[in-house]
Image 1 (spheres, helix red, strand yellow):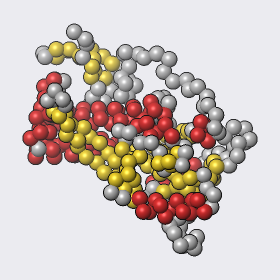
Image 2: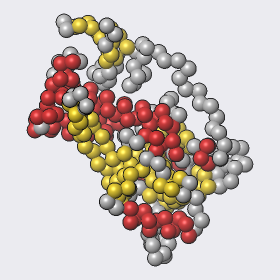
Image 3: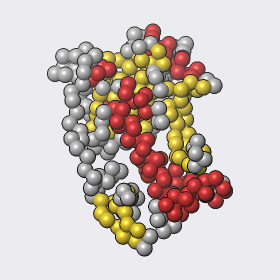
Image 4: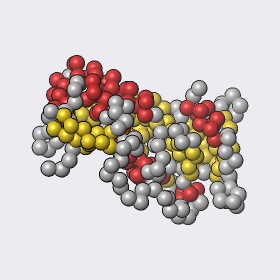
Length: 289
């Protein structure tokens, strides 16, 4: 099942949304049409107007390991992912959107923790075997964090990078209480300009998760873990959203990665706070000296 079909299956169960498929066979046009469209109905007591958006999800997903040397000469590696759309295809789809007086064209992407960590583990494992730079960084992380083996180190880095990326996205959206996994509908344009945070390079439109401020302009987010549909009232209703009841205080005894409790782990090399969800979660924090 395609990402678009998965999303439509979810949204069709919610009374606020109407979703329909579009294709060139059903719509005899001289330009490409979006893969589908969504109408968002009555966000507050069915009194708000209807919003129409075209949707496209025809992207290529790219995973890579970034190698960086800091100004102090410290070597670092990070797992990253990108969503790459063809700009010419987007322009053709925007013609349809404008001609039919839609509110705009949305880029649909799907974030999945299992997929990200699986890809990151595979890339880091291969890099450790073939790339001296990556091997040196991972060996240093292994020693610093007192891991038993390199496989555990690699899983730690993969989880670290996923949680860093997803945490920044949730912070910018003001949705810290949600999982961050699921479907995001992001506008290609905001105030008639390319949405801040979207890159355009060599005929490609690129969503880089590091540019997390892009997600402030999200239209709809579907949390696939908690089965929640969240729409951006500030964008859709042109009014301030309700204040979210998120974290009133930070609990130092709770794992920031998975929400489980932390415990003191003592080893021959020293002690640290580790997650009780180990080995599924590899978060650890060392006490301040």
